[in-house]
View: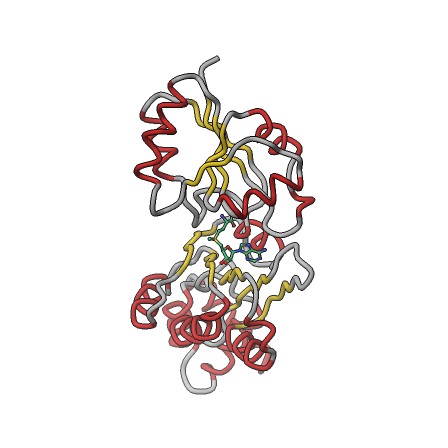
Amino acid sequence: MSAQLFVVATPIGHLDDMTFRAIEVLKSVSLIAAEDTRQSAQLLKHFNIETPLTACHDHNEANRIHQLIEKLKNGENLALISDAGTPLISDPGFKLVRAAQEHGIRVTPVPGACAAIAALSAVGLPSDRFSFEGFLPSKSSQRLSQLEKLKDETQTLIFYEAPHRILECVKDMQAVFGADRAVGFAREITKTFETIKKMTLSELVKFIEQDHNQQKGEIVLVVGGATTEKDLSQAKLDEWLQRLLQDVSVKAAAQIVADLTGIKKKIAYQRALELTQSQD
Ligand code: SAM
């Protein structure tokens, strides 16, 4: 068999999340390319893995690729790991994987923990379609313009954010997406102070402001997509129609709700009619 590059996921907190296969593969390869060799050395020690490590991070990836590809071409199996979770997911490794593929080297994933997927699986927001947005820009003006581009996205949105920026980031989200947009807050997943909550953006701003511990550790934000016909609740639809029907006709109320929510005008009209008839 020709050599393979294994892309190996490692735990995002709880060491028991290391997979049997990850340990087996890391023991079997001749060299492990790691984002931070000192950090990974601790992980390897914990699992009695004695394979040598070599640094492969954002700053040296381009140079290191050449040496790693040569080793692979000489028949050595290599593994790629990052500090935590799945390599390439807001972590280095893309250039190495692409280069390996271009040289006809088999790239084999060894799946495991990923903070984005762990958060999505537990916050209780639609998971059928989602967009992973990684880290937003650190400058507020750039962050706001990026959020503007995502404002009408109906898929669930997943963001990584640094703890020292979490409050300003959630405030910017509130300004752009609105105070009532649903958000999942997943902090310190798999660790001692794990916090998983779902609330609105305005509630999250208050929650983070009132408890400074929520501005510590590692955080994933999962933001509900823009409202669509599918997830506009019956109660909300009724509330809007009833308010509009105080001032405008059934037809106009249906049109306004259809324009604002994307719900079919026929459905809004039918419901508005039912509401007016039930009031008679
Ligand atoms: N490759 C990693 C993965 O698969 O999730 C992500 C690496 S990225 C540099 C680090 C970011 O991931 C953190 O800033 C945080 O947003 C998120 N993250 C990583 N571990 C986490 C955890 N245990 N709980 C919550 N978020 C986490």
